[in-house]
Length: 203
Image (cartoon, one colour):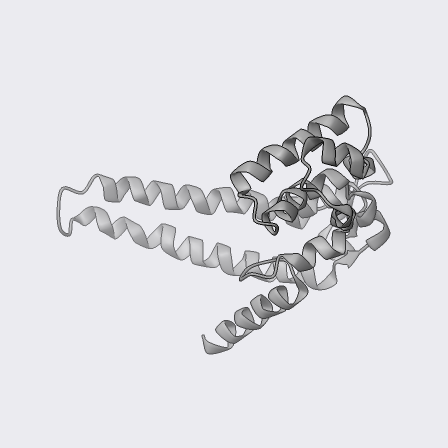
């Protein structure tokens, strides 16, 4: 879904093997493969829900109802296998347009980083969450971007903000700060990739 939206915003270029031109708008490239994958997800989920209903109806132990697991199981395996191949092709041939992706960034995305800034100074998150919210509200009320609020304005909201709080408005630094397992830091992402590759090789 994110890729479909990002494609619409011209942040990525999907290879022609997985997209088609619009019959109405020549500048538009329809992400056919991604849309079909999204549709298949609903089909697979439907099969799972359907068989869950079958299981729910069983009074106990084994009943003949269970023979109905074969069709949804085999169809799901085939569908998922095909979807993985298509998804792999989409990602492998995808071209990222960094400049356009950069334009989609907005400082409000870093509001949680503002809260985390105070957490690193010993303030409980349940408190910093409200403080960050007050900063967002001030920016909205004064019709300015949150990253243009002055140190004085931030300190009027909470005196524990110091001059280095202005370093919070750095997207790359924000990404690197999330270094826990499953985080967005480059080292963390690389570990996730390595773990996935190791798991795949072990199959």
